Image (cartoon, rainbow, N blue to C red; front, side, top):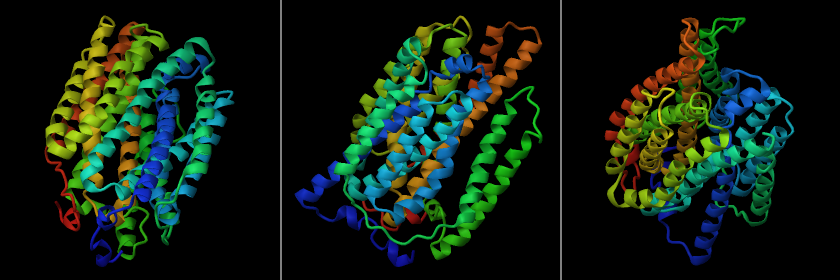
Length: 493
């Protein structure tokens, strides 16, 4: 990309369009939203199933958490490649590729006899999901003018919130009455229907161009993200003997990440980078990504710990657990369009600052849970956390991607998605590791099982609460980009 490439990054979005083109754009975004709903439903349907699967498959929490971690980790490894795919392929074929892969993965999960094949199926599902998320974000940023992006991102957040709201409840109903495989058997026809609908109605709305694929960068990104998350997970496997020290994968991941970043900096001068790091020349994009990473780390850690706490400490079944998490998730979905309109009118800080504060307050409150904590207190806490997250995610998605020039949208959405998923996977791995280590230590001291697990969960929430404080600080400095950023987003705005 030459400097001339960035001359007018909003030219496409700002160009007046006729009624037929506007209708086509709305149809494409609607199809992408439907498919995103399907993949998000699949991701969250597992949230209350982990305790059930631990008993049904006879595996530990450290092993079962790989159903979530492997999904997030695969997305983190695949999402960087989507920056390349979105440039080389048009909208319709890349949509067909993503939903076909996702459907195959869902089928594998539906027929899995045990944990190993189930994790493999989740990896295939994640590959399709990883393509869908940047495709949706990049398409919206390309087709929607800056002044309407907050509203559109708010509509996207409905899908991203209603699916989590329905997922745990559906999971609870299924696990109460049917075999766990029905979680995937029921999702499969929805995925196939979405694929068929897209095959008939999806239109091409982008112009593909040549983009080289650096294979070494792909390998380095897999080593980096995989090593970091696997290393964190290994720290929680107390009593498990490994062929190598548990810190070694973490060290390899950190070194590989350093080499990966260095290679991208070198390749981007010739427009050959897998991820173009010139997006970070925008201070606003950088701060938004940092805040998003911290929020995702705390969120996914809490998502996996709350069901474990509700089922194994408070004694709720999976259905009641799913119903308990329903009001907060529905609230987040209902607030999506409202937050989007508020962002368009007032900007980032009036939403982001109170949102990060609310999330942090709830995480600090969760450090006090024990076997006698009321389920109504957990319900209230989850509702308040959902309110905070509703105020956080729409402004962060919109402000971050609006801070870079249009030619970098695919790279910016891929980087944001990668960090989002790595942070989520790291949060899951770190929280489970801390819970496992502390629980094991308390059991060694003669503490009864329920109290030991409760103590382990408290320690994990303490770390999550501390991490959340950094999101508050970073969020203070995130700004709403100008309607036509042009080069402003690249100058440390």
